Length: 192
Image 1 (cartoon, rainbow, N blue to C red):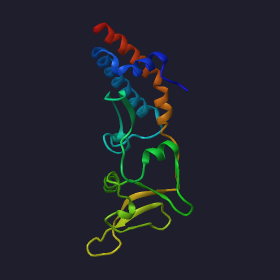
Image 2 (cartoon, rainbow, N blue to C red; image 1 turned 90 degrees about the vertical axis):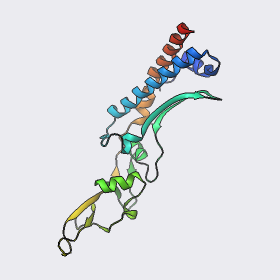
Image 3 (cartoon, rainbow, N blue to C red; image 1 turned 30 degrees about the horizontal axis):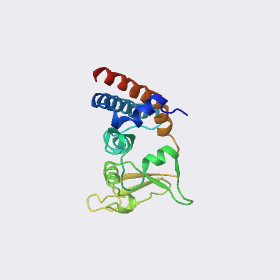
Image 4 (cartoon, one colour; image 1 turned 180 degrees about the vertical axis):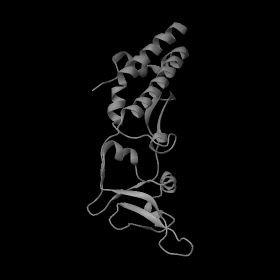
């Protein structure tokens, strides 16, 4: 398993005692390395990254900053959300309970509600499962007639395969992050 090199680890441990020039350079390099890590996650997974800026892709983030007691604080991961943790289902897989199903939002309305932590049970319309289909749909009245158009809002599945590979890709980026910390230290030392 990749790890932070000894030299990079030493820079991180002494970060708050280093000259400002070195801190600034290391911090800049770490931020860049974490952005590259985010891009590696986006390109190296089995997940289709739809709706950039929203959904799973919009929650993937990184940050690095000075921290009062820790010196350097940095992370890459997913922002906290309400409702079902889709990133965990994509990373580890998910399976519905016996006789149940997982509801995957497919319509714009269902996706917007999902962003706010609202699933099929809180959907503001009456949903039903059409015979022999694995969907949740909403029936509309057309011209006063019942049973008109059906709007599909959710796909029903028994399981979601593990395919995100976030941990694997993030851990694989540790040597690159270490190299950037060391390069930032050297770069800052020249400026100091």
